[in-house]
Image (tube, rainbow, N blue to C red):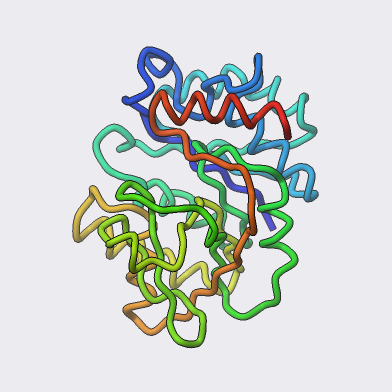
Length: 244
């Protein structure tokens, strides 16, 4: 199984930090970047072969690759999304389809969370080939990627376009993809970005569910974490990152 970091986005709401850097390389604790935390977490659960999907400002990741590998004791493979500034991340994840065929623990490159999230995913019972980390504790608003569950506890819906009162929790941007799901996930992602290139990879999960797939969720418990989309999020990330 591989580690995987989705780090192709431009992060325009974080300018001027992202004028020359991808969002994943924005510092959150001294010189420690969001990507440092992602790589540190994956290495801590012994996932040292890590695929990083790059796009916007990819050269900055190339320039730091050797230092990141040395710092975290990992081997990085960079996969390029050539449409990162035009299309959304359903296409980004599809670009890595040959790699997640080996099985992958995927984390979004803009999420600051502790390693307990990766541990939760890896220790969960095998109930499906795709397992999503979900926060069912925090209060939700409009921006979050919200989920609802079937009576059996599997994913029913995943979208930002949902009344928070209807949601069972928030998908936090971490997924365990087992090898058996790879071909079906790749096909669902392709159908998703061909329908609308501005859709999210989570819409690919929704496509799988619509096709009759079972996708499980793993509650992460009460955990301090944040998806870094804007400067308020970055301030929160800097409050919590130093405690990990």
